Image (cartoon, rainbow over all chains, first blue to last red; front, top):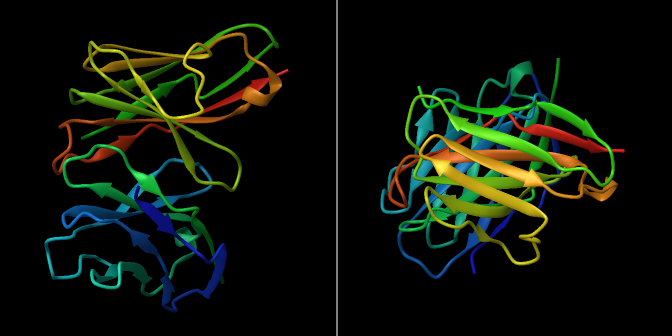
Length: 114
Length: 117
């Protein structure tokens, strides 16, 4: 079974600085998808970024980028120029290529200091 | 596009009663819908997967007789918590996927907070 590990329960970053959230996963599949979701205090899940395992290029979405290391099964999220609105819980998630179910990590609470 | 709604957003019910939560995909047809449960400051726990017109597939440890899921159409799935007890109090989130497997994204509803008194 696939597992997703987020070992840091909390992180804090100064506004305008850069922060990296870590995620590792375990799978025996070669093709899959990885996601980072944001859950702000409203609790609405928001897709931040997604990475297809067959793509070597790291995904980027504006201030958000990932460092995808397939061999190491590592998928970290970098948030540049952090903003107060980035404060939220962030979940790393895995989905098999032909599967529908998402496997979530435990999440990390990110706070942003003004 | 790709909006999923849930109703109600917050419900309080008495112990022993049943409560129904609706999940609707507003601008797309969802072949697959998922129901999650989330406790404060914890991750989402998948309860069941439902495909339109067929019985839901429940995750291990989830009581199918207690959490009734119906996916009656391509835009509506319902979760009914039967004979609710205080320990059922939680935040319930649904998500909907347009295409089974493949690159289809899961779009999440805003969640329903259930409080059982």
